[in-house]
Length: 164
Length: 112
Image: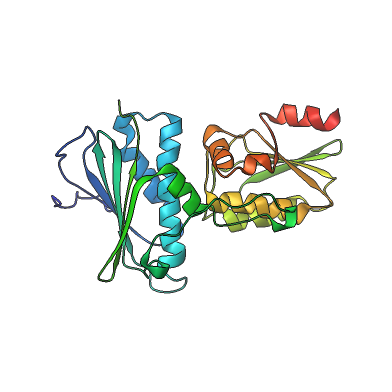
């Protein structure tokens, strides 16, 4: 599947595009707080040939940030052994297809969180400070699929963008 | 976390100079906000015009700060860039906060 690592590139390995205008690419990060920013920066720079509008690029970055944050906070327990997060991206006519896998704990109940919108019709002191992550992912991404395969979590999603 | 506080009249204006309020920054953002709002007047305006990215952790941190400041202070947001505005809109948090397009508009509203 992969054509080997580019020397010096470290986190990247790329393979030739089979379809779509964007070369298929893959990047791996080791979980760790600041790793998220570097991963997102690297990911977004891979998308630069698409010349996405701010609306679309912010959607892509937000979805990926929420997915990675969830893996780091929940799949890989705090203080425990950090593990890899592999992100594969394929550009197709209907958008970006992302496949994200990790070796952490499974999703509770073996399925995706509901990601319900939260009631804001409450007093100030009862306003929610969390739980927006999965709501945003489900709102912005399409075709979400989660599977536990062996000791790995596999998440697939599509982000509809209008590539030029 | 690089943030700048100044007081104009009865308003404490806090500008976030970092580009991101995200998961790695959320805890430090809350701490810095708490420090910069000590002995502040009632009106606190958070200037987000330099922030180009916020995630759910950053949003949660701003909600937490608003709750901490209440009821002695009122937190107003100003200068939301498109990606930041989008997160507030999608989560409908834009209905909870007082939000102004620019810091000037926020100050005008406070003074009038």
